[in-house]
Amino acid sequence: MWQGDVMMEQLDEVTVRAAGAADAAAIAAVHVRSWQEAYAGIVPADYLASLDVDARARDWRGYLAHGAEDRVRTWVAEAGGQIIGFISVGPARDEDASRGDREIYSIYLDPGTWGHGVARDLMRTVLSEVGDRTRVSLWVLAANERARHFYRRHGFQADGVERYDDVGGAELLEVRYRRN
Image (cartoon, rainbow, N blue to C red; front, side, top):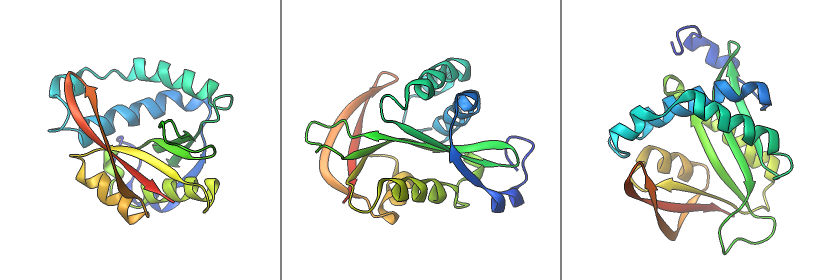
């Protein structure tokens, strides 16, 4: 069971749909819970504890309101009337990106749904949307082995490009993955 209301058997009835402005608060809640679970031991604990769902919801309202003009699309996974995950994709932002390259900006799930195929459904939706001929990249924390394994299973490979990002006062190594 997750979020107190949705039973695990409802994961058989997951719907993936385009996100709308009304989804901002639910996306924010999933975003914060996922960060707090996935990045425990990687990102400083005080930073994870300080994540605020209301502040993140305000950010998401802005992202969703301006997504179309920025050519960013977000999809949510829903089960039992609750949003349990999301994925966002838009133009690739790297210096070496070609016109038409896409980047997965985020993919997060409620931790109670990990390992049940929801992320796979979200990823398949995006890959179907962008098409087989579009190069897709994403950035992942080097220490996040679970995510790196997931991306490899979906045809992404580390391409040798790395960067450091300040997350909660810690300089963390990120690795770029690409799928051609």
